[in-house]
Image 1 (tube, rainbow, N blue to C red):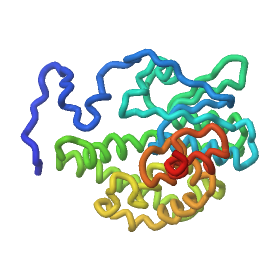
Image 2: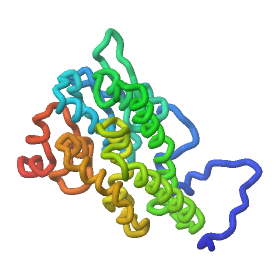
Image 3: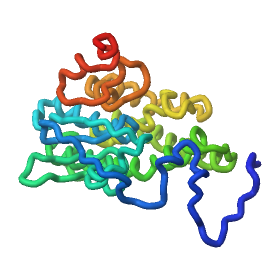
Image 4: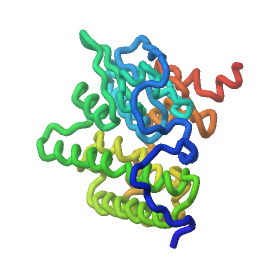
Amino acid sequence: MSDSPAYTPPSVWTWNKENGGRFASINRPTAGPTHDKALPVGRHPLQLYSLATPNGVKVTVVLEELLALGHRGAEYDAWLIRINDGEQFGSGFVEANPNSKIPALVDHSGTAPVRVFESGAILLYLAEKFGAFLPSDSAERAECLSWLFWQMGSAPFLGGGFGHFYAYAPTRIEYAIDRYAMEVKRQLDVLDRHLAGKPYLAGGDYSIADMAVWPWYGTLVKGQLYEAGEFLQVEQYTHVLRWTNQIAQRPAVKRGRMVNRTWGQPSSQLHERHDASDFETRTQDKLAVQG
């Protein structure tokens, strides 16, 4: 059943720095900054500090979608936070997000800066600020918010659970992988059954619910997350695949996926975004040629 020896927990847990696997250098049981570093501030009211993980992509997608709708106030600076280097533990970032996780948003459009952390909270904040991608009808709004919070509660089983034990843990534990694979497939079945009868999660209109769920479950069924598509037999979730492909074709989604991305094809990476023209002039393949 298990490929690791039996483990008996001690009476009192103590931190073993060497037992953290791939992320041992950045994981710790305490909060707060590890070093002093102020966050940069660009010329736009909205300042995003992030990385193009699924949680980061949620926010760059909604910002690009807002700009595509003509909301010029959604112009933003996206600063790269290299989490593997511990930049999320700088004093400025911890001030923006005491939980030291990307993404973090600071809105300078009012009399005093407003910080917003947790990706779902940022999506809701921006949707309410600009009056877009959040239904006004009470029943439709409830449906949208239900799926938004479904994602916030479900994704840890996919990321910190399945993804960690399947792709990153120093030792593969059969029970852990089996337990989380079962839960991820149950979640995919929840989505697939729901999307069988409607084009988007909240009904007929694209919303922040789709923007929250797509970067996790959309990339999973496309085989782009943890390289686990075959293992999880994702091709059977045909309604999720249809929904995924439909969203992936949106120009704003394509742009949002590029922002703060530091891996993949150079042409798919835009390490920082400070102006819409950056998509044409600052992608990494062009920088390589210019350099």
